[in-house]
Image (cartoon, rainbow, N blue to C red; front, side, top):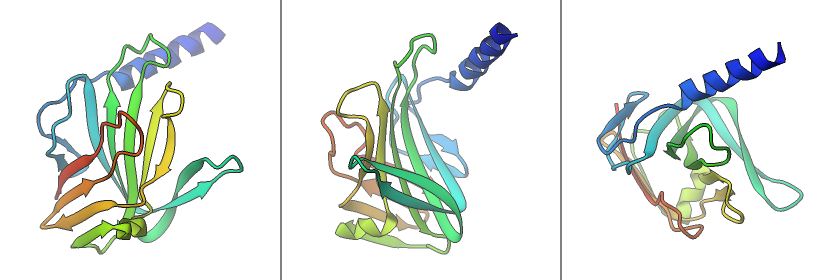
Length: 170
């Protein structure tokens, strides 16, 4: 019985992990990512309406966040994830930018420290000492005009891949 549960879990993991690298435009949740996603990586964009972001710091000084139900807010999430062999434990690498805006936002132009209004965070998930974790994005550029979202953030950790994100939202 225990073996069949483990086998079923492994099969489900493989099925949900399989995809191909994208060097072309990719659509997700009525949005099109227009910056290239490098080979062996998968880029996605997710829109969560009526949700907000709660960013906290634990007793050890590390940041974490939760997404909670909040009418009138929207959480947006861009992920850059390596495509790895699911049989290799701890081989993955993901960078995710998560932030919130008002549901009614039609235009947005935040630069410098104004980006803090969105509670934007960068989450790096990997088996890499000193690099993994959630970091608050304290400055950068976030514009949304004519259904085009543009994000620029500084390098927060050495080797960070995600610095510029361009998405067309429909």
